Amino acid sequence: MLADIVKIHCLKHHANFPMPRTSRVVVCREGAETHTLSNNFPAEGSWVYCCNCQTFIAWDANRDGVSLKECVFCFSSLNPRAYTCDNCAVTMVDYDDPTLRKHHVVLDWGAPQPACAGCHQFPHSTPQKHLCPVLQCEVATARKTCAFCGVSVQSVSSVATPTADAHVQKALAEAEARAREADERRQLAEEAARKEIELRRQAELKAQEIEKRATQELSRAQSSNQDSELARREAEAARQQAETEAKARAQAERLAQIAELERQEAERRKTEAEAKAREAEALAREVEERRLKAEEAARREAEMRAQAEQQAREVAQTYTHKLAETQAQVEQVAKGVKKDRTAIAMTAAIAALLLVALFYLVVTLLKQFGSA
Image 1 (cartoon, rainbow, N blue to C red):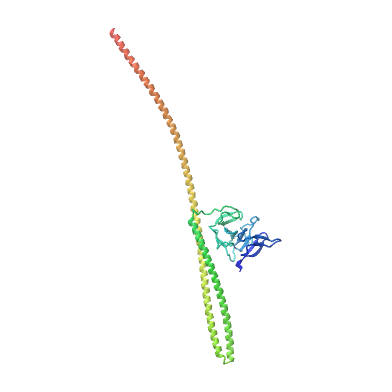
Image 2: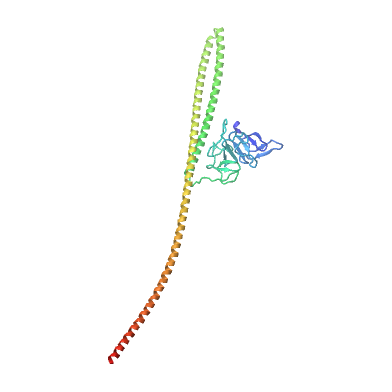
């Protein structure tokens, strides 16, 4: 089957060749000597899958002038979207250039649809985007570090946004299940259509054969009166068989219409699932913005608290210094007051002694004046 064949492009020789998907060893036989591109495809090596031309490119990041901005095989370049799988060595890149049909796409928020083109697995967590300088474009991946530039990819914190991440994972799982269901219904519809075409072809062949036989029998009936009754019966039987085939054909057409309606319903459900996935992505971005605003507010509050604590420490130091100066001044004043009290007491004692001496002197003078 064509689905079991993949296209390989070798950058070294600019050669294209097909390969069975079940083959793990990829060998390029172009040029003077054959060389092995991978011993365990798609888990080994470095591969870039273009969703437009459906080609696996053996990537060499050391080659000059090669980037994901333009496909090296089909030259698509409009709005590149890249996704690096966290299960294998395949990097999917999708462009908006017109193409007939795509088996895989990369959504705007970085997830593959319906799954990775190499290992057919979905990412284990929500892919996060980063600008890769090696590939010269924005790359989404669920890995912890980029496989090309080695930059640590900042993932959404599971503590900050557990509900949004759960919604995204649930929406992605529902989209994947509905995509598988739609694909199964499409295959059933195609199988029913093929059966209906085969039945219609067989009915037409039988109708032609019966008509031919009836014509032959009628011609024989005209030449022989004895076989006229038998020819009439066979013609009646042929007519009944033709009616039965016509009923079978109508039934097959009705089944084909039912299959087509189911296919349209499956496509509608797939579209709804993709819309829910986009809503979940928008919710995740909104929660992330709220988390960033909360972190900014907390950082500002912490800065204001640190400034308030610094001002409180400065006020406390100023108050302590002034209190010490005031206490020293009070002690000096107390010492001065104590010295003044001692001087006053001595002066009072001397005055009292002088007053007593004066009294005695006056008494002595009075006695002398009296005796005289």
